[in-house]
Image (tube, rainbow, N blue to C red; front, side, top):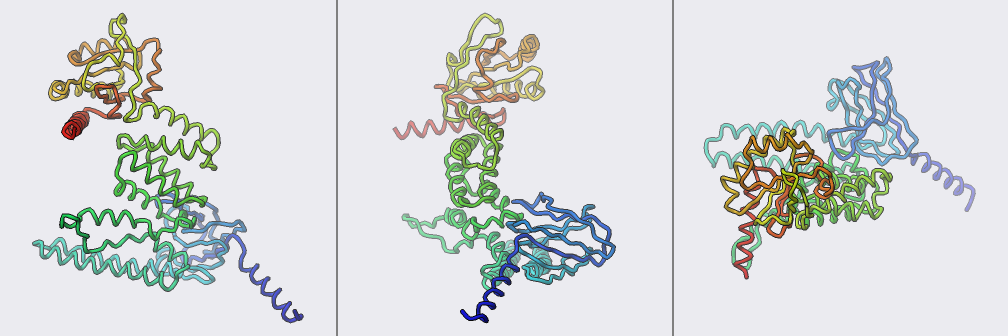
Length: 480
């Protein structure tokens, strides 16, 4: 290699190293603001919270700068005035070096970027959205004056045409900028377009379930799970929330399967996998839908206990494991742990297993609990009005050892027929651990074999659950 070529090659390498620095360098000048504290923040999965990375002051000329040599994943960040009078979203990627000129009072109209950055395209899109949104709302307002179905349908047709402007804008941008981060953002928020023609079933009818099935099957097609930068945007959690609540059948087997599918998509990433597992764990543990705690146990056993949540410490891990251990013995479909408890006389032991009934409502309650004092008479009323005919018994456990108040409450509220009142004054049954009783009232529904068929129920849904179980039982008998 001659000297000229060698020197040219070295200069080329130098240029590469100079332009490939980690971190970022941002300069901004606000024409109508100065002497203010400003934070540099980033999103993480959702739009309701931002996390601070750095802070600086606008000088007397309205200038600021943020600099870091530390590598970042990149995503959508925010310049946030400390007094919350204004905020400015920006795309910030690893290695970015650019300047901003902007007016605080009209950020999206005035922002100008110089340097290598995707923010010019980002802000062109923001300005397009303002115009698009105004036009959409104007058409939508026509629904208020529509007097018949024909008029309404005409407005809906206009809205569909208008919506296509937005999807076309994004599609055209992606076509021209296929490797850009903004293009990935547009793909991430994209929704599947459902085919207009329904497939025909073997009996000749159209498959009405096809649109939903198609939408679910293609929901994640354009979301790049392997790009952790998308986690640092306000997009991912909303998509997860919509998917899990609107498209996934809310039963444990289905939910656990979908958790597996999503975590498989995120496998190999750092932030996307972490966020996905965290979200699904929280969602299954706190869900109000009966039985989904089984999916929480599934996640703990198959991910946390197998060492796949590498970012949590031993104390956090133990909390997850302990919670799963408390739930596991009382999941729906499990045999109820037997309890041998004393009646109000403190002379007779009445085992839970000895209760002869088609259904047993197991209630853990306290006479000093305000919610319990409201709920118990309602259970008595619904027992006499509707539950009695299904051969239901109520095995009511006093959970706080308020002996005299307990007996007085039973007597004052005439909780007699259908009720079996017991307590465990010496705490020998370990009922809190077996039935995860961390608050009162806590309720379970057991069948004639003392299998758990419902949990965390109340007086408003116990009858509906029993009626559903009765219908299911009848169908199974008819099949035989």
